[in-house]
Image (cartoon, rainbow, N blue to C red; front, side, top):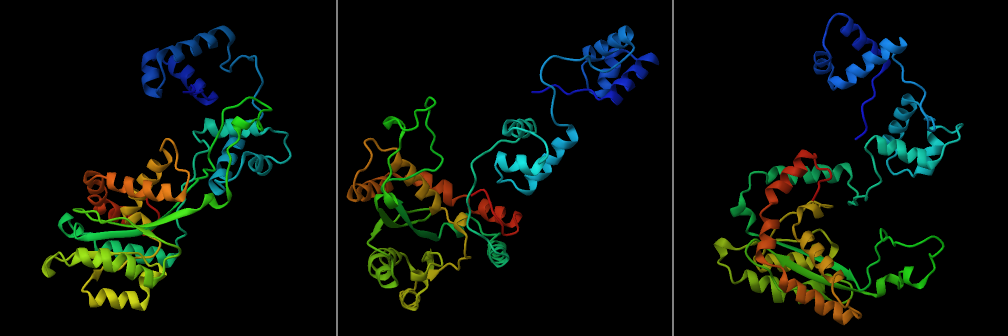
Length: 341
């Protein structure tokens, strides 16, 4: 931690307080400094008659505190700017290095960190999300455990992480061991459908090609969802949640669910943070990437997804579904905006 520097006004205040008879420790307690700092300043004043620091070795600062504050105002307006762009916008007529920019930001406690990505929310999206959460703010676990959360997710065969870094020496960028080989479009992908609740986990379904309303009914709703719901008495029948994707909201799908007495949960658009199943997809994705040896074909990827789906425990799912009140409260606090989920 950098030491707090005494301003010239504070230094003269210390000299004045000592002249009135205050002790070093009393001055330190009042101003928030250690008494040794006070004693060194008083000794310097006795010897030199001044309170300013003596000239020191090393390169002097090329920016003032006022200019540093101007940089912080710029970064608050444009947090995604690079150090090169900040240098031009900050002091365009001054010869500064990007290292100086980074040093000033680091001294202010700022660092370049990973960007969190979220769906774009319009004012209408925020209003609908807030209204949805306010209507369910009083729901307890007994109510939430009836909800069956469903979703689809697509997994790439070869995931390309744009944040990947490599430790290497200079001028070795094109050494074969330092190159990450990629394939177009991730080498293909596998799309799966899943459904969880506080008390159960339904079978994972592989979606062949692009999902349509007819395919959704024939391969998901009829063999999995309706069959599972029919095992429950009508009085305790679960509530089915799916998002607003076009196949889910086609007229044929809506009629099919109504004809089979499947009650659905109205869903606000752009709200993946309210669906605990999104975190299960994240668990599967990290497990697939950690496999050794890694999967090499789409068939291996599909088999690995089904295998890892079975390995997701009830305790993991209950930690997610049991936190729905916290998710709802987070959206309400954000007035329908972004949350940490």
